[in-house]
Length: 253
Image 1 (tube, rainbow, N blue to C red):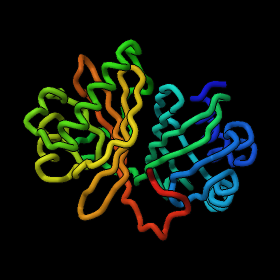
Image 2 (image 1 turned 180 degrees about the horizontal axis):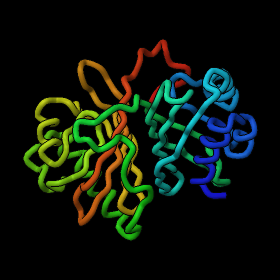
Image 3 (image 1 turned 30 degrees about the horizontal axis):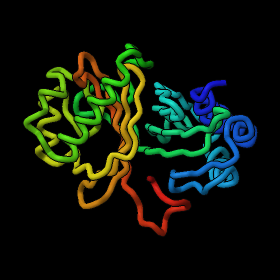
Image 4 (image 1 turned 90 degrees about the vertical axis):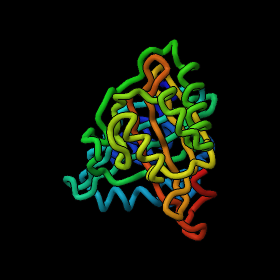
């Protein structure tokens, strides 16, 4: 069993197949620190949340679209259609694992599946990392991009990082580098004030950040595909962070 298999197993066996206790025993370690704010810590917190979820959503089409494994960490990009499409969600998850390859901590962001201004679907695109020898250089590029453009606001540097014809899957950004330029100027992307995690595998790099937009803080996952040092494809999910009294754990970060 690999770390990737542990993350996918918890999703597919525990949630899609409706066997949460069996999946927890198989894929989760001696602790389970939870940052999905509606879910309590530990295995019992998972059970308390997902048993009612499974009961009220008997039809669960859940697909892990793409994954990244980087050291201890596994990232998953997931589509969920519940009860024949009555609700459709896109989730990005990050799992930390222990030396036994089992899950010990989890972060996530979930948003509604919706049309995008570019016309490229929120979940479309390549399904696996490629060019694995470029992992470190691509991670360094995205770290610099996040720092210089998204945190520090260096908009004039956009051509150094984003390909002119980049493919855009965000519900907030138009296609191409011009879409990024417009979104940065308009505030549609928001102000990034913390890069919390960055992981990568080959040409895919994911970041988890806190973003201030529209007067509220949001938890945001961005997923980038790079070629020749430039961003050529981008996905994201964003979730407004609710008030502290609504959390069932220590929070999104």
